[in-house]
Every structure is written in C-alpha cells, then in structure tokens.
Image (cartoon, rainbow, N blue to C red):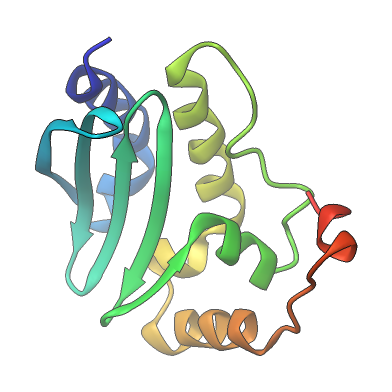
Amino acid sequence: MNPREELEKGVELLRPILEPYGFHFVFESGGNSSGGNFAQGVFVSGNRRLKLSFRWSLGCVEYQVSGQTITHAEYMEAIDKKREASYPGFSNMPITAFEHLRSDISQYCGTFVNGNDDEFMKIIKAYRAKPKKSGFAALSEK
C-alpha cells in the first residue's frame, strides 16, 4: 500500500464537499518513519485547515481555525454527536474511513466548513469545558 496514493484517493472523495467553500488540498509530507510509510496533507481555506494523516488508514484528522485546533473526535464530542459519528468506523478498506469522514463533515461540520470563526471557537471552548472521564467511566464511551 502506498500511503500517498491512498491519501489522494480519499482527498478526491472530500473535494466535492469542501471545494465549493473555497478549500483546496495541499500535500504536506510523506515518507518512512518508525511506524512505517505515511502521508500528510491539508485542506486550506483562508485561516481554516483540515489536516489529514494516513499511515495504514486515515488516522489523525484535525480542524484548525485561527491557530486553534481540535481533533475530529473532540469536535464530535463537543457538539454531542460522538455516538452518531461515522468516522473512524471499521473496515479493511482504507477508503472507507474517508467515506465515514465525508459523511460526518457533511452532516455535522458545517460550522467548520462555512461558519464564522466565533462559532467555531465556541465549539472548541465547549469541548475544553467538558469534564473528562477517566478510569472505567471512560471505557463506556464510544
């Protein structure tokens, strides 16, 4: 498997839902590291960035506005959609993770895609203000 090729396939799935809002994709880096081959890139629109990392599958997905970052899982938790979210899902096919992410972005991430900065900052603040569970209580969460 070539991570860059897999990332590029996934990017093609995401383009139709991001490009209408001014996002374009920039490949950032790729190569080999201690965990294996990887590829990273970012959709950019003004001060907004959607960072994607791929190694064996789509891994870290991060949303950034004006230098403030939140992961996809944190975003879903902040807007109370953690249980409904499709990403990451489970599959042997790497493209499936991108399909799940596309579904989540389409359904739940309008504030990032085309909202204003203040609305997005409220989401980050909401996540940071939530009490974090630990121990066995954390295991009951999706």
